[in-house]
Amino acid sequence: MQWPDQKCRCSWANPKNERYIRYHDRQWGVPVYQDQRLFELLILECFQAGLSWECVLNKQEAFVRAFEGFDPERVSTFGEEKITELMGNPGIIRNRRKIQAAVTNARVFREIQQEFHGFSRYLWGWTQGKILYEQGLTHSELSDEISADLKKRGMKFVGTTIVYSYLQAVGVIYSHEKGCFLEHQD
Image (cartoon, rainbow, N blue to C red; front, side, top):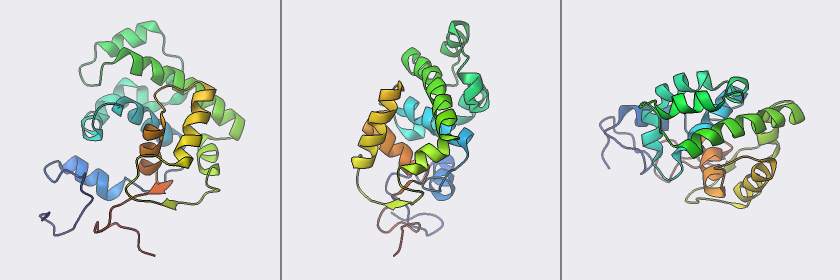
């Protein structure tokens, strides 16, 4: 594909969506260590289940406002009144099960933070802080293990494919495609 700036990108990047191009070029695969950003991306990946990432990305600002900056402490306290309010918010994906899962996942996220002195330590501990370089997969042994652990702890919408996508987004797994200007070179 010929890009206006002459850079080759991963096949999934939509050349007609500037936001998506910026996400591909500046965020996807860049290691994330801040817990609040890790929480935001986890919740957004959960909302993406069954939809496209582009759909979620286009609603990101509305999600940030609706979920109070993705502060896990605040989200963990959302009750039925807040869930009903979110169900009426046209700026986000209005799926009751996913909204409820966000609240549940915030509670589990906080428990993991306390147990491991940060969610980042928990997540990056699976690879001893190393970045894995993989292409063309939708799940792996690592995503299987993390998915199983998160489910055991009570999280929802964290199947192995969602977890794999999350690991790619936060840079634990670096997956820029062959020919992409960001492809990992040994």
